[in-house]
Length: 185
Image 1 (cartoon, rainbow, N blue to C red):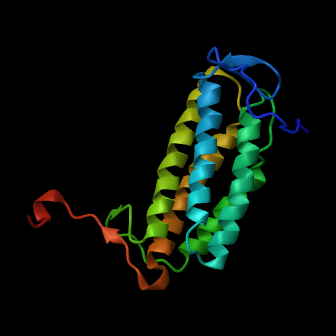
Image 2 (cartoon, rainbow, N blue to C red):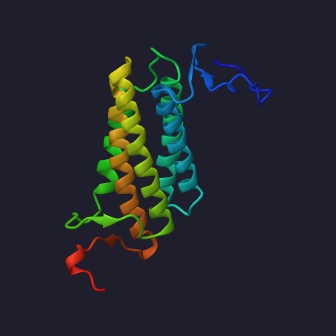
């Protein structure tokens, strides 16, 4: 699978195009490149989150997710290639149920924050939503694996739940949104 990178710069993209995994070339701002580039950005935000102090079960889950996101990026950079199975979505749903089980029900909207790790998780969540939008856009223009958009949809839900878990870790709390006419000052 693939080639080893022995030379980092190739100069082949200097004119504004880039190579896909199947050898074809597309513009660097094509919907396909936008999709896998945003998935790469998401993976980087998960990496930033992993640089935080985290409970072991959260760390284990996020590490698995990074590998799955790399699979997704590979799938998106090779037209007609599928790497994201339904089992990935099922695993996310199991994670969601497990992490959400001990959380109190939401009665208010929460603001991104609560702790540094929770804020980083919210950043990953919104990046995931953008990746999902990019994959949906690509799917309107080209054939894509429909599981990929479902995967990102479920992943953003999981990142929201993990942000709630992380906001509570070590005795922290979530920041609840207060409507403008109920805020002081």
